[in-house]
Image (cartoon, rainbow, N blue to C red):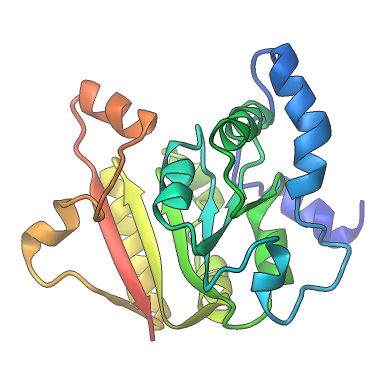
Length: 232
């Protein structure tokens, strides 16, 4: 492991990589479909990311930490002319999404199963139309806040890869992380919060499908915030 990889590993933005043993079909999907859909960072990035997709697409959207994959599958079916890149290092979540991709025959999704910062650094400048960061690990203990994905370094990455006018969408049920994100984007200076009135940030994104994380938050009495920032 080289120095950069070692540095990334010590400050990973995600926790464990695997949970319960995979079912037979999930294991088969990981062995066969993931290699077909995984983006190979050992190869130079294409100048136009549309080349990553077998079918013609006119926009590119990245979702970091897609969890159960409900949102990613919903958006991919809702926007068939958009190419989606999903990043998720948790093996069980990746296996679930692969099965869903197979079930609905989605052909506009590519995947990466490791640290999202590696993918972000590989992407060309101004190559994405939107980045979704939905219910990321809040790392609630203060000593772990440096592991939160929203940081000045990662906002700089977002700003570089988003097209001018591109969107960064963030959702969380943790008040301290919502405030953290607002403070960090304001400090960065390259993102404009699109809220026009106080209630905007409490309204889910258009055609929001909800997720199991959101449902859990509501069961536990927590409300969610939905922030949209435009790259300036």
